[in-house]
Image 1: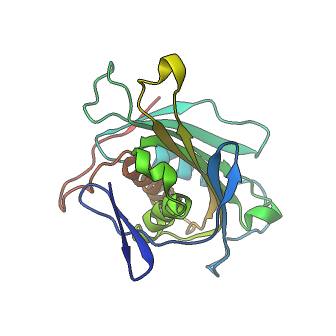
Image 2: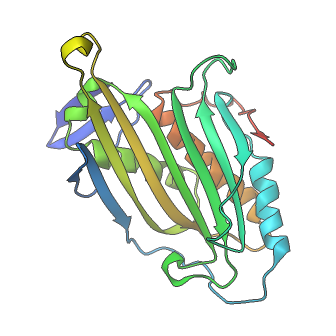
Length: 245
């Protein structure tokens, strides 16, 4: 990863290169750096009409998630979802395994959870909520950069925007932790881990929940692959990965 100061704007480029925009501030936390970020930009508001629960709406979104096509390096598995946060929920664990061999360690891991409450809890500003985290080891110099948090957050928002998705009420934290070894362990190289915990409200079109929710999953998958340091897929290459159940 290369860093440079260009007209006082920090630019980070990974692999083939992705220019990152800086956002808000960071705060010290538990030996690392945590950026608490809330995106308050005006967006098309999701419907919060407390209608009768529509299992069909959630089923369409669920079908889209289960049939989503992500990058081939992504390994997804459906896992037990939380039961007390919303009437309907689905959860996936994700790993980035470049070779897709079962005995290879993943280079990035995360989780993607979708909640649906037809009553539209006020903090959500809608009836859907995506709750996610993604983490990966980074280059040692990342641990010393005060803008690593804003860069990590921009990876998420850029992925959502590049997919042309509707979303609102985004919030989350980006934590960068540096581990150094001493004494008998001094031979170990320093390690840096970046973790992004984020949630947002997908704004879905009636009748198109399947395609749009699959695209939200795809945006999170792009975030996880960016954390892992993978270059973007070449134009025209089709992703083939799917969800294992």
